[in-house]
Image (cartoon, rainbow, N blue to C red; front, top):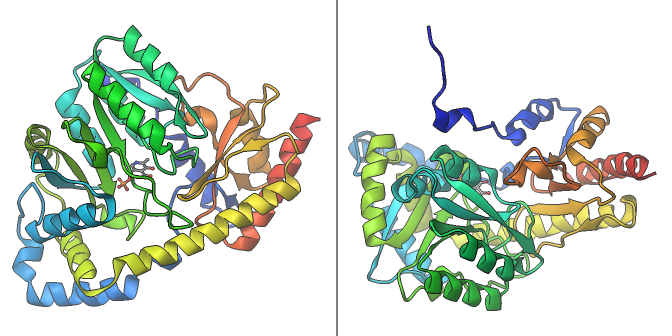
Length: 396
Ligand SMILES: Cc1ncc(COP(=O)(O)O)c(C=O)c1O
C-alpha cells in the first residue's frame, strides 16, 4: 500500500509543544511550556447547571444540526460584546462562529491563499497559525517583533520584495509567544501600510481581554473603515478552551466563503458549547470572570518575573508582559535553546524552545517561551530556580 503523504502535509512538523507535553504529563515535571489557561478559573459549576437545563429544556436545539454561520443568539451576543468591548463591527462586516480561533485562521487561509502566495507573519509567531498557512502552501515571510510590536521598516521591505502577499498575520496584543503589545502608533501605521499596499490584515486577538492593569490598546479592527481587517477572537482564554468556540469578524465576502469552507470542514460548530456560552453570558457576568483571570495571571506573571530576577543569570533578556500568558527570554551568547531543553528536562522542567515559533525552525536560536498560567506559585518559583541553574551552567 502506498502511504505517501500529500505535498501539502508532508512538509508540516507537529508542534514541539505537543511533544513537550509528553514530558509534562509526568507529575514530577514542572511545565512552563504549555499555553493552557488556569483550570481553577473555569466556571464549571455554572456551566454544569446550564448544561443540565439546556439538555432538559432545549434538547432539539442542542442536539440537532445547526446552521454553519453559528447559533444566532450567540452571534448576536458576540456582535454586542465586540461593539461594546472592542469597538468592532461595521455594516460591511459579517461574523462566523468557528470551532476555536484556530479554525477561523485555517478557513480564512483556505479561502484566500493559493499555493505559493505570500503570508507575512511576525517573527516569532504562533505555530498553530504558521502551520495553517504552511498547510495551504503559503510562502511565509517573517517580520521581527520589537518590544512595541512589528518592525514596520522590515514590514515595508517585505512588502516591496514580495508582490503576491495575501495578508499580514499579527497578534498585536500580549503576543504569543513574546507577551509584547503593539503600540497604538504602530497599529495606525500598520493599517496605513496595509491599505497602501492593498493587503489584508489578519488580527488575532485571543489574549486581548487578559490585561493586568485594565489598560487596553485599541484593536486594529476598530480602525477598519476600509474593510481590510479580518479579526479572529476566541472564548478559549476567557471562558474555557475545551468548548472549542471562536469567531471571525471580517468583510462579508470573506465570511460568506468561509461559511462554505466550514461546511466542507465540520458543517457547524457543536451546538451544546454554543448554547452554553450564550446562556453563560446571559445569566452570569463574563466581565467579572475575566477580571478574576486578569488578577490571577497578573499575580502569576509577577511571581515568575520576580523569580527570574532572583535566579536567572543577569544578562538574560526577557519581556515584561502587560497581560496574556507568556514571557519571552533571550539567553544570547549563541546558545541553542532546543539543545538546552534536554538539559532542562533532566532537571524536570520544560519550556518551549524559540525555534518552534520561527519561519525556519531548523535555525538554532537562543530564545525560549515561558508560561505562568497553569503551575502553582511554588512550582513557578522552583521551575525558574532549576532553569536558572541550567542556564547558568550553559553560560559558564
Ligand atoms: C495566538 C493564538 N491564536 C489562536 C489560538 C487558537 O485558540 P483556540 O483555537 O483555542 O481559540 C491560540 C491558542 O493558543 C493562540 O495562542
